[in-house]
View 1 (cartoon, rainbow, N blue to C red):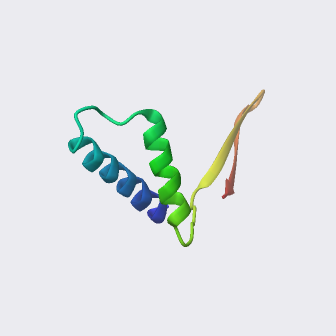
View 2: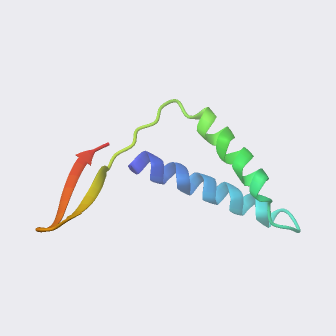
Amino acid sequence: MRKLSTLSLVIFLFTGVAYSSQDQPPSAQEIMKRMISVYASCKSYVDEGEVRTVFLERGGPRTNTKPL
């Protein structure tokens, strides 16, 4: 999750720098193109976390948790 957070921060900062040097904010397409470029340049990617599924049953809710 740390690498994903770092990557998100880099994209955010890159977009902010690009915006500050232009009169108008970048379009959604421009942001997506930049994001794709950043992801494509990454040497590796690691995701961390878990998936939680909550089942609503007669006896009460039941949660199933699985790692990613």
